[in-house]
Amino acid sequence: MDQLLDGKTALVTGAGRGLGKAIAEALCGAGARVIAVARTASDLDAMAAERDGRIEPWVEDVTSDDFIARIERLQALDILVNNAGSNRPEPFVEVSDENLDFLIDLNIRSMFRTARAAARVMVRQKSGVIIHMSSQMGHVGSPRRTVYCMTKHAIEGLTKAMAVELAPMGVRVNSVAPTFIETPMTKPMLDNAEFREFVHRMIPMGRTGQPEDVANAVLYLASPLSGMVTGHSLLVDGGWTAQ
Picture 1 (tube, rainbow, N blue to C red):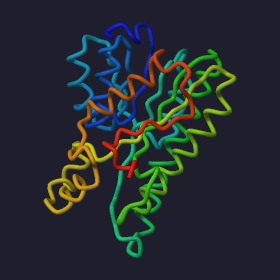
Picture 2: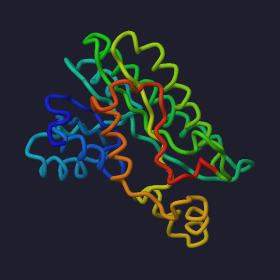
Picture 3: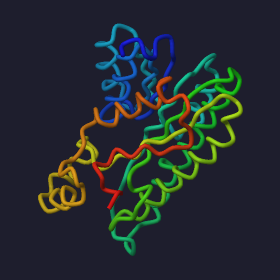
């Protein structure tokens, strides 16, 4: 497994902590050279220092034009993990325009532009893999998450459309759709005992996921093991959406 992605170059957004960090480390552990993108230099530098030069830190804002241009200047890119995103739970009737615009810009627009930039590199080289980080909320609905659900349903649609269009050019496109994973982003929600009980009740396996559960799914989709898989959403949800 440590040579599964030997010689490949991967770019992971939102790589400073949580899911992105676990994914970057898993890809690196499988032999890839990883460009790790985040806004906080200290998070990236600490990770890079542990990986003997196999992780290249990019301190970037994924919504910026400079970041998009930097991707397009790459000479080669084999794997994109489009992971950067966020959530601001609110009751539907109380959603502010500020939060609506923030989540659409980060969870949809920046992911679209990042994928487009990566695809331009991959189409030139006639090969590549794009993996969008979606959510089980891209398949179902949930209270207080209308905007988040909307953005993740959009990503699922984007995955399918990109997969169909780019397949003849040698580029595979899939998504990974996790349930609630224990990360810094979800910690405040899961620290609420009532909410945590609700989550465990909704997951037939009876537990929240760990970042490694998602990283392993990404590793499969990034590797030749999934060579005939495109346009697919790999649910890592403990059975939530099977009910």
